[in-house]
Length: 189
Image (cartoon, rainbow, N blue to C red; front, side, top):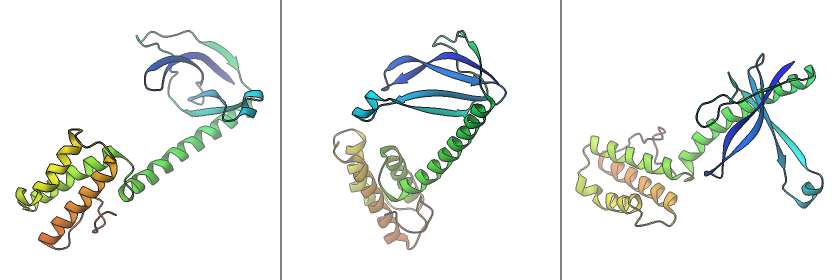
């Protein structure tokens, strides 16, 4: 089965662009690559190689300026192509499961600064919409501002989470049982 090998630029450590060899399988619409796994001294002597494969409509063979890079044609055995297709399917299923679990987990455990700060902002909006006076939220808002402007930098994720829980409790104490941004009717843990 036909595959095309090319180099694609990838970002390493959020700052360095390097070339990475990939294969594109046009009939299957798959992209795959291989990485060397070196997690122990034993791996240095006897490296392991791990394939990555995922669905892609077209090869990713354009450089940073958008110019198409050259490709080389290869023939792959049918059983290897079948394994690549199975790997791509598993990758898709793993990513879907990881997304579902992540969305549920981030509501319960303060893990991500972006989620917590956005959820706090939504709680402020909900509180204002329910008529909670700004002066009642002033202390919480002042502490949130110190997190937002970088005045307070230690343990920001937990602090955003704690402020959100405090704000939810304030709203509940003024208006009785309400829904929270997590949608379960209880204050997030």
